[in-house]
Length: 492
Image (cartoon, rainbow, N blue to C red; front, side, top):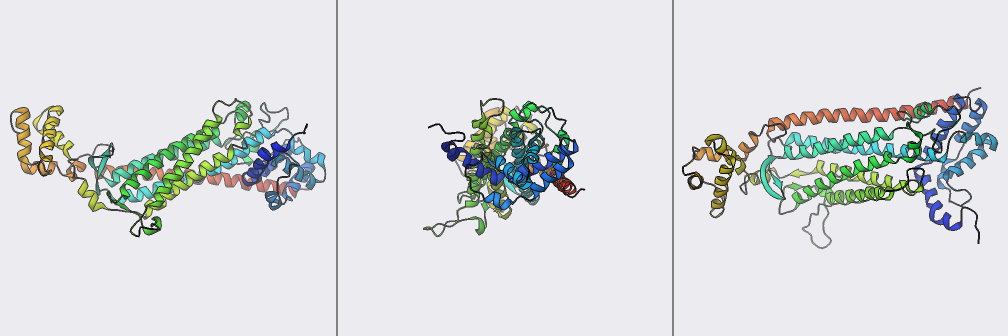
């Protein structure tokens, strides 16, 4: 059996699904590309004003509901050819309709519509990160004095504050936002005019098409316009870094929500009971943050693996079947970030218990060693040995480092007692003292976390301005495109 292209097996396993995906993701983008391209052709006198009016009129008469609901019947290869057929029918003149495809290819159309969809998703993801950071900032402002233990290797390490802890997450999120902004800016360049891969002999204006579609300009090299996939691999790499951060945040809050920790509580709207155990308050919202983020990370890695070692040129590996996975990864990333923000905004911290634990398990003794160094002019290694001896001795008793234990340890290590009094020892071992003297840039002292908070607020304000400007640019371009179409279809 010698079937002509496309064979039924190819239709069933490739073209049908790709057609459905294109209906869902690209219909409006296809038509905007058509509008911008044909306007430019007329402006460059490549087609006549009459032909322009006829083609635009046909595009505007299309029944988008019918097209979106159409079942794939195999009569055309894909949505692009389906739309060209519909436009030709609406034109009533196939020759005029055919001029729409002057100086372009499906190659440059495809990589353009992919960018058109992804850039909107990228702005949505950036906005969700802005909202999450705003939640962090509001929590930080409430907890400059709220003591808590910091952990290293999952063990209590040193006292800090909730503000310091949450600022760490805030700064991570700010860096994620900057990376996403750079990915957006690199993506928001227009490949149209690259045609198959080497541009065209027609005198097209690539800057004009880019302007009408809201791009910052055209891509520079036509070969790279078609062959390069870093417009989405950069975005996915950046998104992967974000998702790893979100997963780590979620894991931290899930541990804090365990009854054994009991230092964060989600309200009823974000917890789930058990079908058999009435007492259960399962923090499912944050579990779903972790699960969705992991799902999205898997999708990003799946895409990156799929395009690894593919040829540097026009190739199906990076096109219709792959693109929906890009979109799903970004969509799920938005879900994870947004859900974490909502859950944390509603959460309450058990600051009393956190404060108790900020002085438990000997986690203030680093400052005792530092104070011995400063007051007695001893090497840190010696002070470390004295304090380690104190910890061992106190652990064998009631867990409290007394003045007698300190002096006995000092005599055993250096042959004489230290100058520190009992009151000075108590002050040195307090969590408040530990935190308050760490005023170094980046430290947990309230004066420093307040400075850091102001810096993060400034960054947040700048990022909101960036997002607003980016969205306004797209909206203004859309308005320009609509107005240009309206003028062309109603001109004499």
